[in-house]
Amino acid sequence: MPASAAPKVAQNTQCTAIKLCYCVNDEFLPVIDERVKTLRAMIAGERAKGKAIGYFSVPLSTTAGGYFNVNAEVSARAKERIEGRFGAEHTWVLNPAMKEADLTAPSGARGGHGEYMLMWTRVLEGVNALGEDFDFVYFAGPSDFASFFGLTGQNDMDVIAKYFDKRLAEDAGLRREVERGRLTRASFRNYYALRASVSFSNGAHDEWNIVRVLNERRRADPKFGNAGQLPKLFDGRAVSSGEFENPIAAGSPGACKVS
Image 1 (cartoon, rainbow, N blue to C red):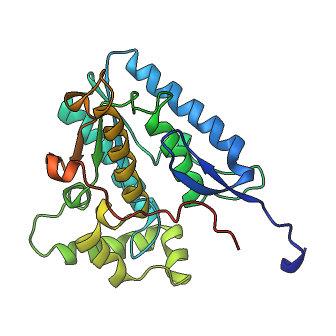
Image 2 (image 1 turned 180 degrees about the vertical axis):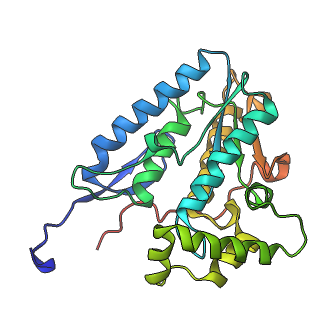
Image 3 (image 1 turned 90 degrees about the horizontal axis):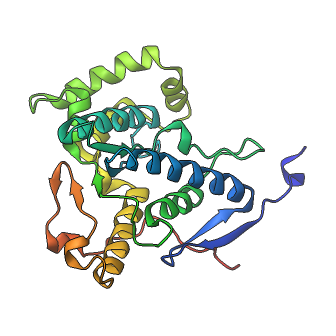
């Protein structure tokens, strides 16, 4: 079918219980509903074991020198490390790169930012819009990526550049991204040496603001109050109260634009 004759896919604004709105492809709505049910069931299963439940916020997309497959591996490794830090018998961390969170429509189309953020907002807010399914949110920082690459603070860019060379020879997906002009050795090196953290992620910016709204709602709820807010960790440390309550620039364009 010629591109000009391809059917248009309807996009509509979808808002969540905490009144955050996203422009979403209608084809994904039943897929998102199913994923939310699956993820909530996974969380409930771990909660039934008496575990504290965490959410790991991490940049995943191939952009600005970052590569999805590497980021997904960082996410899986960080999940293990966080669970190990607190005790795997006591803690379960939701890894957003897990296959159960993949958004692929029946047509084969892949979900975009709006679709993923609608899903994650609904998961994070919970049925009561208080984030009640989670006990903490961990935002990835430079040390999470440094641990993955084995960086020591000595000649780190060279370590990353050599990793790129080795991976390029073995990873067909990385080669495709390089051939498409989406990645270069220099952009990969610079991203993982200088940018690799939630600070440069659209999705993580949105997730920071989601948790801020949830905590605002918790502070106003007598069952939670200040003491019952959802803890935030960044790069392995607790976030200060000054950082805790401040919004940051949105990563999502929000509602659909009316032309």
